Image 1 (cartoon, one colour):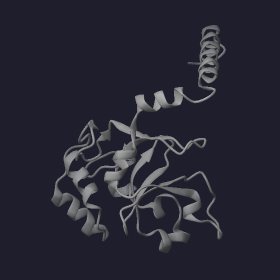
Image 2: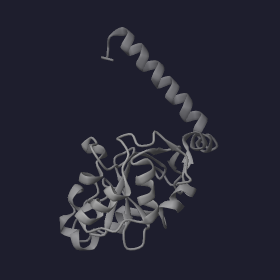
Image 3: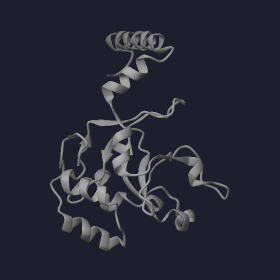
Image 4: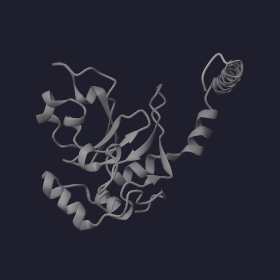
Length: 196
């Protein structure tokens, strides 16, 4: 794995045999690059973890939870977290979505999933659209990369993302407003108006 990893193997190492057993148990064939990631760092975070988006509001996000194999907390478990249909109440669309495999979550809790047919990576905006008869996965999601390896070339560090944001119009004004709100909140807490 060529991407810079922080906190490798946070829940312990896994082996190729563990991954193969997982695939066999669930009738899956995972992308080779992702299998290597599991064997190398099993749930470890990436230094470059921010998807820069397309310039539209809320299109930037941070990947902050890669799922892992083994004895892990439920929120980080690949075993219980990979099934998009089951975990996001999409059973009415099971046939169309059966080949999507969740491997990570962003800071808002929305999942990132492989399309196991071609290895492409999709971001599903769980809170974006209410599933109904006219609902479309593609309307509530967007393709981020054609592969796990390509995703690493698109991601940026939090520092680089902050630098990018600082170049946008209104950034200074927003920072001033944020500073004023933090000051106001500190004063309210000091007066006892709010619990800390």
